[in-house]
Image (tube, rainbow, N blue to C red; front, side, top):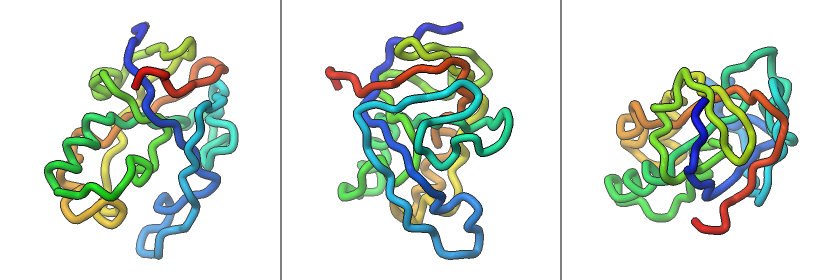
Length: 159
């Protein structure tokens, strides 16, 4: 298991799906709600989130996205008026290559996770962020993970 020292910049949850299951339909209008803390449950998901108890052993009980990737995308596409919430990931990190956690168990703020796969970007990214976002995010779409222990995640005071 990897003990990590990366930081949490933002924490989000959403009560409903906007893009998941909406292929060839308009997106939903469920907001991403920013929190200072998220309660997480082993094998289940995040309290109040759309993927809580979604299905047994779901590979995306929680999702991570690197703030560095967000900053790079803003610069590359010259888009400065979107928050990282548009990617609909739960935990926005700083200081870690999330792809290195795929297939590995890791711990963050005393909570254990298993990185299952990349959050592969899809065509919705162009709509949510801006034209070219899907292509620019290939291999950097974030991390899907299973939650292995109950606990809480908090935004780091030092961002």
